[in-house]
Amino acid sequence: MQHRPEYHFTPESNWMNDPNGLIYFEGEYHLFYQYHPDSNVWGPMHWGHAVSRDMVHWEHLPIALYPDSLGYIFSGSAVIDWKNTSGLGQKGKPPMIAIFTHHNEDSEQAGGNQYQYQSIAYSNDKGRTWTKYQDNPVLHNPGIKDFRDPKVIWHEESGKWVMVLAVYDKVMIYHSPNLINWTFSSEFGIECDTRLWECPDLFPLTVGGSAEIKWVLLVSIQKDGPNKGSATGYFIGDFDGKTFRADKENQQWADYGKDNYAIVTWSDIPAEDGRRLALGWMSNWEYAESVPTESWRGAMTLPRELKLYKEGNDYHLRSLPIRELNSLNRNTTRLESQHIDGPSRIDFDTNGHLYKIELVFKDPGEGIVGVRISNGHGECLDVCYGGADKVYYIDRTQAGDIKFNNAFAGVHIAPAGYKRADVQMTIFLDVASVELFADNGGCVMTDIFFPSAPFDRIGIFGDPYPVILESGSLTMLNNELY
Image (cartoon, rainbow, N blue to C red):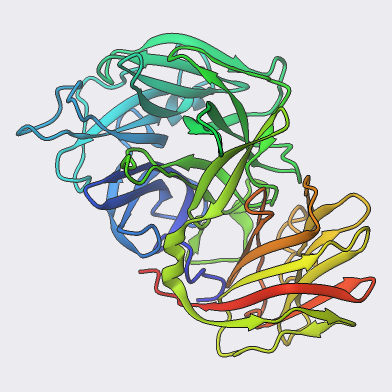
């Protein structure tokens, strides 16, 4: 089926957007997601559901949550209630609890401003069947139109559940002893921000190379991202169980591409694993409903591990592809160190079009080094580094169909922000997407594209020549997603 990714998660059919309820339990990674089963454009939201043992190979499961008299099922999260604080567990086993926004479309159309409120559902069979709590909602709307997307965590130090909730231009934080009775704690936001905040996430990370712990607040912004449109940003600060404190002027971006939104992280990853694992929706609200796919719309990014590093006085997230993706590796062509004197094509087994490309170049100074991915129809996608401004960029202006939306074509730019003698790129290429992990995850970009035929040619170019390739490899990938 044209444009359907071969190793990124997509719905079996129809519309999908935000990942929801990411949780690990008894050997399974759960992925719930915003789903409209009756159309390939946004509509009455359900929670779709899939499970995996490695976040790479997925099994589709029946829809988990359907709309009801309280409204559509908007975004949210899930937790394992290990201590059965909710009292909803059975036979001594902890329940899986989903916390989500009910969106009452009738109330919104009638002009009200209390049409979003928070509810819960519970499962006692590893997420296979769900029961909505009989006294929903558990958090009523205080009179705010945009009041949604609850992410819930257990805060060990205070012995309470904590909810971070998107409230138009800020987040509100609540706490609860039992996931049912919620009390307002505090809020965090940028005064007079005109951008809609969505899909928050709040979690601690240990700063690499130290014992210091900082808290990360992920927030997706529906407009004015670093390359326009929607994007996911973050703040680094401190959290005491009630109040998040951070520099409000220092919002950073988790991905500089056009197509990584609503990034959230998995709950209940075992301590012996210790990773902070994340996933995003691979699209942009500027054109998500008009991309040229028919029986399905929407895909997820590759799962990523988030790490936190301190550089001088500043903290930055790094995103790295999870190690489980190595299970897709098929065969690898090694590239020797070489001077490249003109546009070149990498010689490799062309019996395929799914790749992981790993390249290390000598820093070109104010010049440019790049990878051109193309097909026999004259379509191409460029992934490059360089120029006087020292940036990474992806150019998809000639990468296939761009006419379906005026906001789609473009050259997307990311600051490199590092001082090294070489330039490191890891590129994952699927049928209709590219994900760049550069400088050990310090710069990340995700873009989708829609070629008329698969990209099966890979070359290196630069300005000026010669380009100095220090090392590299090209790995063909399997398409064993399901």
